[in-house]
Image 1: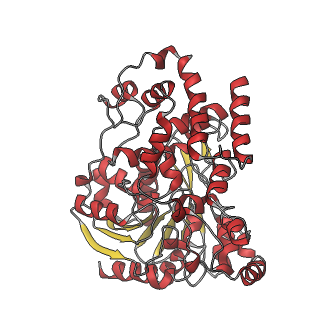
Image 2: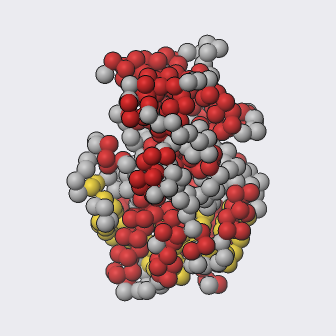
Length: 474
């Protein structure tokens, strides 16, 4: 308890200071020192002598952190890569702040911001159904359905997202609404750990075991359970799968680990596919990548396993990345923008309160750690628990890679130039790793980013119309 208090005081002090010592390396050194104290008191971890820099791990990285602690700034430098800090800044430059504040205040009157999704969908004339699905490992998931006579379409959200993502763009632009207008039978999934799926047969969200999952478990358990449920309810043998961000990651996990599910997919549309992470530009994901040291430091020391919008790590990132001012204050109040980026030119100010009212929706810190591991490993592979734990779990010291050659379902890849999480080079690499790509579409707008795929002002014309076109062609 004393260590926990000391760790909190250290972090809070760093969060509140503007001194020269306020820097990412110094923050992480404080975290690594705390982790090192824990390591030296653990005979189990202290016995670990096999270390490798190619394997991000709890045990090995923490052992390295004991001596020397100075490795952390080098790890951060390696993780951040050859990028300038200014590309991450959320600023007020070139923006009419008076007009922005006026428009935002007017938009704040929109009641859609406070309506639950099962209230929001009927408001625009659609029927909505709520369905409960239990996974093989006993997580209880919620699905929403907009019934239609056409082919079943299953939409899966991204990291920190939920089913809400596919309706927040509004009645005329939201992908779920457009699909329903076209006559499709629309199913909206929710991964374990988001606001709609916070239940388990045994564990409670207040328990660490509830949050012991990454995108691996979402792909291995959540997606198969929901897909089987949809096919059973609709009496169909296949469906169209549309995923955004983590919704694509989890799909490729499922299609690799459970190849029989390829036969259940008529078409998979990957919006901003996140698989290979070498060129990822998200500062938060990159800062997680020098090992799972941060996961251990923040989660185990603070007893916090859920990625919360108001946690201390996010407070630090806000101070580092955000300038003072109305737009920065509004944007940086939302953890999702800090993770995935921000595009003012495509921001629909009149719809911003609705977006902020529905996202983010929750996630496990382990999900971020898994993505962070992918940055340094330069591979798409299972979670790294450390050499010894990997031997017990996988039979090898390094986590096995997902076998993308097993993915044979037809895949359409949608990507953009300014995506913080799905860099064009990494998407090109994914293209080369798949044998069944039927369409490759780059959004024709330079600044289009990761979140724009579901919330951009012009998302209907730039993305969703193309989605419908591909679906009708196949």
